Every structure is written in C-alpha cells, then in structure tokens.
Image (cartoon, rainbow over all chains, first blue to last red; front, side):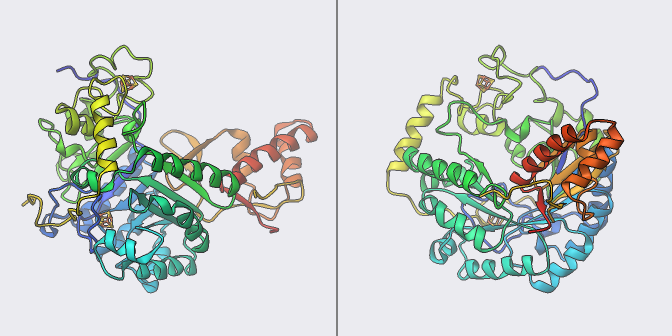
Length: 372
Length: 96
Ligand code: SF4
Ligand code: SF4
C-alpha cells in the first residue's frame, strides 16, 4: 500500500465534534455508527475544551457540535463558551428535544453562533414515525420558535427519502414559517444505519428528479430570503461527490470516545488505526497519522481514478461507500459510472425503490455491537 | 424576490454571519453555517463598514479615498459585491 508523501498539508477548516451518541430519537438513517458509544466512554469537559483550543491554534475556523443529541451533555454551555473563546464559529446541530428556551438563552450568552434544527417531515404523523418518538415534531416546532425568540439564527435540516420526498414544497414553506435563514435538504446517505435501511428509504429516480426541480426553482424564487442547500443522493448520479471535500483535506471529526477521524464513518474501514485525542494532538494526527495520510491526495488510487481527470475534483468519491458496496476501501466509489459495479448498484436502487418499503430498522443502542 | 441593494441601502451583516481574521492563514473571512468566504482587500474594506449605519454610497466614497480610485467605478463594484452577498443571505439592508 502506498501512502501520500509527508509534505506539510493545509490545516483543516472544520471540526465535527460528536459530543455523544446518546439521543432520544431513533432515526433509521442516523449517521452514527451501528456500534454506538455508551455514556461511560464519553470524553470529559476538560478534554473537549482542550480539543477546541487546539483546533483554534491549528487553523480550524468552524466547529459543528453534533451527536447523537449534543444537548444530552449537561456541560454543553461550557463547551460552547470554550469553542467560542478558541475563535471557532460555533454551530449546534440538534434534534431540539432536550432544549428549552432558558437553555437556549444560556447557549446564546455562551457565544453560540448558529443552530441547525432537524425535522423529519412537514406533517407530525410521518415525522414522529421516522423519529421513532411520539410527539417529537410538535416539540421541534415549539423549539424552533424559541430559537428565534432568543435571537439565534436558524437552519432547518431535513433528511429526505421516499416517505417524505413528496413534501419538499411543504418543507420549504415550513422553513419560511419558522423564520429560518437557511434550509438544508439532504438526501439520506447510505452507510451505517442508512445502508441497513436502504430499501425502506431510497426514492425512485422520478421522485428524486421532481424534488431536485422543486429545490432549484425555490432557490431562485427565495434568493436573499431563504438559502437552500441541497445534498443529492449519489446512487442515481454519474459522478460521486467529493466526500468530506476529499479525505483529510477540510474536515476532522472527533468521536464521543475521543477517536480522531477523517470522517464520521471512517471507523468502518478495517486496518486503519485512529489516534485518541487524549494521547495525540489534532495537529499531529492531521499531519502524520496513517488514518489521515493513507487516503489523502491521489497516491492511493487505482484505475479508473488514477488516470481520470476528475481525480482532484471528487477525490474518487467516498471510501466508506466503496468499502460498503465494493468490499474494498481503495477502489473507485461504485456511485461513479466508471465503476464496474455502477450498473448493478443502479439496478438495485431501481428495484428497491420500486418495491413496497420494508419496516424500519430503528437506530438503537442494543442492536449494534457496543463500544465497551 | 431578492431584496435590491442600491446606493441608499444601509447594509449590515446577517445575524448568522461572522467577520473574522484567520490568524493562521493571514486572511479575512466571513463565516456562515458550513460556508466560508475568503475576502480580498476590497471585500474586507466593504464588509468591515457594514452595520455602522453607512449607506452604500458613503461606503463607496470612503473606499474611493482609501484605494485612490474614481468614485463611480468603486460604487459599481461595491453594489455588485453587496447584491451578490444579499442574494446569498450574508448581508441585508437595514433600512428594510
Ligand atoms: S439522526 Fe435522529 S437519531 Fe440520529 S442523532 Fe440525529 S436525531 Fe438522533
Ligand atoms: S473514476 Fe474516480 S476520479 Fe474519475 S470520476 Fe470516477 S470516482 Fe471520480
């Protein structure tokens, strides 16, 4: 195996701080790993504060405080204050369930820059079914109002799939009604829990195209009022996305138990060792750890990526998806039409999305093998 | 419909936006959720004057002096920059 040469690399731009895997909801597309980390393995307040200080010194500009549900951490206010004093633009990615107005006010005072709140659908019944939690949607609407009432800027995030994709127009209206400045319409991504639920989630190509057209029109119509970010699914695409903007180029993630990762799904790749943030600095990990250098750049690539003129545009797609679908992390992402597996993948997608959806396999602590 | 910026607009940064110096890379940036805009000297000169109650015309006049350039030329560039940022939700018109 070849690894990238050890020349100094540009520092990362953003830190994904996965504060906890605990969450009251059970979304079947959750981006957390199947093996969820229990509370006893979580990092202490002091360690996180040190991580944020290191991040600021390294040149990281934004931190996404995520989970699980980050508000499950009672020290969230202290963590926000620490991130902010390290100079980081501080974004809270939340389901809203464990927040209330008083806590939002304290978070704002601690220096929180922005809140990204998820909803699962525009109508309560479907939303609660996805979240696996009765009454979740109503709580979220109330929290959205509280977020705006304390003066925090709001992004509404919705993961779309075959059960809610028909309501993209209603979701856009909901974002406007909740006074969000930004709406993120992200198609479910198919690794981890999402892959386990793919047949229950994947939309048809026609559904995808209709949703894409609606978003494109709304973007133009709402320019200056509502920014809409759109993350397409790559099963029907011809070329893959540059996953995480390229491996080890922009993002660094820290898992609840302290593992430093190039992306939150990277732990599925066998043979890579991830440094522990209590033993290795972020700078050291970014610069030297094999977990980062191995798939950084183009040195690891095989054909067709190696000689492809898009190799520094999409960086060969997603390593975790290559592993999950092709059985090897160092081959072309099957989402690319130049992959020998692409046609099979499209056929699977078309077949699954046209069949009646199976029951959800809800995210749960007991289903996956726990990390001690 | 996108809000129009004109010479009488009083531009300010949106609440979710932060203007910040990036000490490691020695550059000025505007931060927004999952977005980062690196500013050149002119863009920084404009954005650092937003939110002070100045109109676009006043900002352009100040820039004309700072960069020693003809006022009408600067005004066109400033309008174009601010309209683009307004379309992206980064600045808004405080008059509104
Ligand atoms: S995707 Fe759903 S279950 Fe997973 S952390 Fe977010 S709210 Fe919780
Ligand atoms: S062959 Fe590789 S580099 Fe070329 S478009 Fe496909 S994934 Fe990207």
